[in-house]
Amino acid sequence: MKNKTVIITGASKGIGLACATLFYEQGANVALLDISPDKSGINDERWFYTACDVSKNNEVQHAIQNTHQKFGRIDFLINNAGIQRYGNVTDTAEDEWDLVMNVNLKSQYLCAKHAIPFMQQQGSGVVINVSSVQAFVSQQNVAAYTTAKTALLGLTRSIAVDYAPNIRCVAVCPGTIDTPMLRDSIALSPDPAAVMQECIDMHPVHRIGKPEEVAELIYFLCSDKASFITGQAFRIDGGLGITIAGSKKDS
Ligand SMILES: NC(=O)c1ccc[n+]([C@@H]2O[C@H](COP(=O)([O-])OP(=O)(O)OC[C@H]3O[C@@H](n4cnc5c(N)ncnc54)[C@H](O)[C@@H]3O)[C@@H](O)[C@H]2O)c1
Image 1 (cartoon, rainbow, N blue to C red):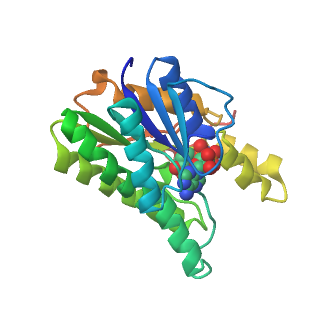
Image 2: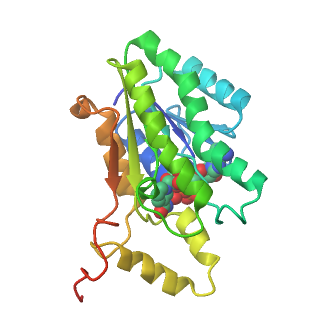
């Protein structure tokens, strides 16, 4: 990864921070775009934080241009920033719907729009869109989130087809991962411990995932070892959703 540059959105916490740390450890230049401050404590030429709301075109354009100016190339774009909001279509307010779409879907289009021209100049690049298992199966009360995450699979295919053969695009669809997003969502419940247990029980491997496990998959998909993979959605979910009612063994 030496002399390669990765842009990671939503990199101040959770899955994004795990990706940033892994790519940094492997020698890449890492550009972190996040609306929250970088609290990593890493102070290095190869660790470049920019405050950026990825749902805003001008902020994305500026951050990506700055990254290119600093490192001279953009090899990988990891479109990871996302927010979770709860509600069905009748109780989700229009502005809440728009917010979820803008942060979880429009941002990935905007970052691709501004990063891909630099990849085209170089003749190579990889875009990773972080979706969710909720692109395939859904819970109650996540209408906007599940819609955005499903649409990302279409965006992934479009980028893969439009910019082949030199630029690949792959979607990564995590199950429940232990991040601040998960902890914050669970804290909204009157019984967080019970909700956490429910999350664990949903996964046939009988645990939730770690951000570092998702980072390892993303790292592999960016590497040349994955050069024959494009346009696909990869689930990393401990088997969530593969069982049908009544098929669960007692543990
Ligand atoms: N944690 C899970 O269980 C899980 C499961 C499936 C998919 N995902 C997806 O993985 C991605 C990362 O999730 P996470 O759990 O690490 O979340 P997180 O909340 O722990 O971290 C998300 C990061 O995105 C940043 N962010 C939010 N809005 C932003 C904006 N407008 N502009 C720039 N940055 C913004 C936050 O500041 C934060 O640093 C998200 O797209 C999420 O939907 C998470």
